[in-house]
Structure formats: structure tokens, C-alpha cells
Amino acid sequence: MKRKDSLFKLIKSLTKSEKRFFKVFSSRHVIGEQNNYVELFDAIDKQKVYNEDALVRKFRNKKFVRRFSVAKNYLSELILKSMRSYHAQSSMDAQILEMLGSISFLYYKGLYPQAKKVLQKAKKLALEYEKLSIVPEIIKWQKKIMDIESFGGLGEKDVSALYNTEHQLIKKIDNINEYWLLEAQLYVEHNRKGMARDAQDMEALENLMDSPLMDTALPHRSYEAEGMQYRIFATYYFILRDFQQCYTYITKLVKHFESRPDLIRLDPFNYVNSINNLLNMTSVLAKEEENRKYLGKLQEMVQDTNLRKSQSLELKLFEVYYYHQMNSCIRNDEYRQGLNLLTAVEDGLSSLDDKVDKMGKIMMCFNAFHISFGARKYRQAEKWIDKVLDNPDRIVREDVYCFARILLLIVLFEADDTERLAKEMKVTYGYLYKRKKAYDFETMVMGYIRAISATKDRSDFDRLLLKMNEEVAALRDHPSERRIFAYFDFQQWLEAKIEQMNQSQQTDSSIRA
Image (cartoon, rainbow, N blue to C red; front, side):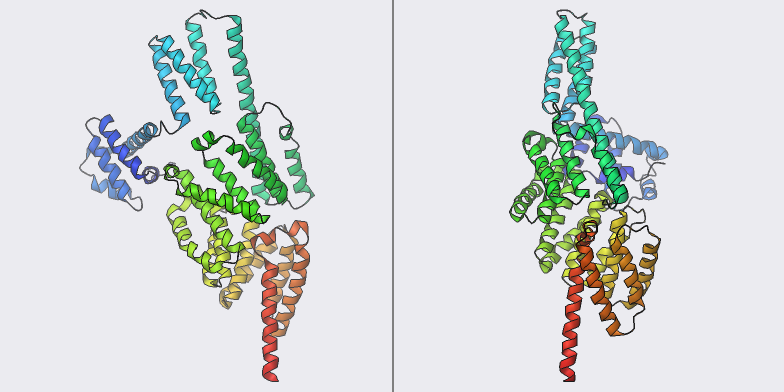
């Protein structure tokens, strides 16, 4: 069933300049009812929330409202047609496809010499900018013209060359598709299980990486295939928590993109994504100078008005920029300064809503939690961790959801919200009990949740803190348990609580003395 608000979302996605162009375009291409469709466009654009009943009432005297679904479909097609025209010169794909339209026209008019000139230009652009999926269509038209001209003026060398070109091209496209499948399988495995935990998880990953595609000595790879191989290696090492190797391949990927600045200009999205991942690795490995360098590049892109023409890129830049700005504040213990970012983050997430990448949104909420918690704004921290947990469609990966539940308990403990803490302890305990344990840490936490909830005496509570700190310290050194400290430094928090406990005991001793 189609969503009734699809036209509303399409209109709301347009920039001001795109909306202006649509109105000019519709005045040239719609006869008779142009004003009706512009009025409908404006009425939908003014709505904050889509309300079809209000639109039907507003246009009750217009003929088009009798078949309102047809009118909406027509307006939607008209918008898309105008946007194809608007973006024709800014997209290489659109330019080449427009040339193919010209080739088709010239062919059916019998103007073959002119068609061949456009074909040569289209083929040169497609190969130069690695638009490999379009080239077979160009070659198809070359063959049609050869055929209708009865291969006049051509020799066996000419037709063999065209055959070999297409044959090699299809192999490259198949190769890219094989890399895509391998990368997709790696992500599906990662999204399903999170980080590799046991021998079974490792075996599944190694079986994927055992592909001949991952041979770094493979010759004659396309530019796209080479980049995909770097990305797959980086993802694999990230899942293994081998950050040094992940950094190595992410750096190769960024340099790979930067070797073709012309391609970055045409499609900067993947470049932004690679910078995002490089910033993650330079942060983890404490490569501060390199981190600042690429954060500066990211900031330049955020300030580049030309890049804001693409909404998907603008969304990605919003996500990446604020995530790493917050990350910088967390790394440098600048929590108070970080609080200044949170209003912009909250406003952006609210206005962009479901357009922001789901996992990206969750990790931004995690960073906002860290800043709020570090600044001792516990109610604010509670709000951000609730945003992570408040996902009824369970877009949250299992390990993320698990640690968010544990962090909620810590926040409620610090906020001294005993009523909600008691309730959430039961919920978390029940969740961890039913869940197939991925980390020893979870089993340990279950025991302490049960013990702490039954504690009445302050000395028992202090003893539990000390014992828990010892066990957390031991787990921190275990390679398969390190992941938990990426979400929250439990040991640092426990040590801070123990220090408070010791200070309190010293104060009590002084008072008694």
C-alpha cells in the first residue's frame, strides 16, 4: 500500500531554488491547468504535517479534486520531470543519459553521422568517469548504427575491437557486483551479530574474507572495485577491533578517492563517508594531528554551499560533522563546551527525523549522552539514552541496545531516581536473562544488579562497588570484552565512585574524631 504522504515528503525535500525552478518549469510545460498544480504544490508545501482532508476541503471547487489521487500522481511526475531537467548539468549520469536521448532521436531520424558523433562523446565521458553501467547502452546504439549501415567501411578488426571492449566491460561490471555482494554479506553478518565474539563468529567472517576477490595482487581492477576492496578490508578489521589495520585500509581508501578529485566533485558522498571512518580511527589511535587535518577538510565541506544542493550529502555532513565535534569534546574532557553543541544536534535530529541514517543517529545520541553525563547533567543524559532505547522497530543492533540498557541504570543511579531505577533494574535483568549472552560482562552485571537491588546497608554497597571494580578491570584486559568500553568506560566510573566513597569515609572519620 502506498503512503499517502509520499508527495508531501517529495515537496518537503526540495530546496528553495528547486521549488522556484519547478514553478518556472510547470509554467512552460503545463497547458491550461498550470495554476491548479502550482496552487496544490504551494498548499502542500505550507503544511507542517500532511493533511489530505484539509487539501480536499480547500480545493473542493476544483475539478482535479474529484480524482485527487490522479492529480497527486501527475504533480509528483511533473516535479520529478522538472528535477531531471534542473540537475541534468550537475550529474554526469544525467548528462550521458541526455546524450542517449539525443542519439535515439537522431537514429530514428536517419541522421547516423550526427548520432555517431554524440555516441563518441558519450562513450568517452562514460569511460573517463567510470560510469561503466551506462556503457553497454552506448555500445548497443553503436551496434544498431553499424547494423543499419550494413557495416559499411568497417573491417573485422573494428567489430572485434567493439566486441572485446564490451566483453571486458561486462567482466568489470560483474567484478564490481561480486565485490558488492561480498561487502553486503559482511555488513549483514555484522548487523546481525555485532562484533565477532567466538570461534563460530570468526569462522563466518573468515569464510567471507577467503574470497579470491580479496587478493591485493589482482590485476586490472576498475577504480570502483579497488575502492570497494579497501572498504571491505577496513570493515573486516573494524569488526575484529584491529584498529591499526582498519586505519591502514581506511587511509588507502581516502587516498584512493583523493587521486581522482574530478570524481569526488561528481559524487562526494562516499568520500565524506571515508573521512568519517578515518576520523574514527585517528581518534581511537590518538593520531591527533591527522584527526585535526581531516576534521578541517570536513568543516570546509560543511561550509561549501555547492554541496548543500544534495540533501543526502547535507544529511551525511550534518551527521558526521556533529558526531566528530562531540567526539573531540569527549576525548579532551571538554564536556561543558560540548553542551553548546547539543541544541543544534537535537534540532537537527528533530527536523531531519527519519532522514538521518539510523545507526548514525543512534551513535550521535550516544555521544550526546557522554557529553551530558560528563557534564553531570544526568537528566539530560537520561533523555539521550532513552532516545537510543526508544526504537520500536528495533533498528538498534543487539549489543548497542544491551549496553544502552545498562547505561540507563547508571544514569538513574547518579540522578538518584530510586523509583525508576527499581523499575528499570527489573526490566534490564529480565532482558539480560532472556538474551543469549554475548559478553561475560553481561553475566557479571546481572549478578550485581540483583545484589545491589537487594542492598540495604551502605557498607554492603561499598563492598559491592570494590568487588565489581576488580572484575571489570580483569575483563578490560580480555580482547573479546574490550568492546564494552567503547560505549562507556565502566572502570573509570567505578573508580570515581570508589574515590567518592573513600572521601566520604574520611569525612565521617574526621567528624567522629
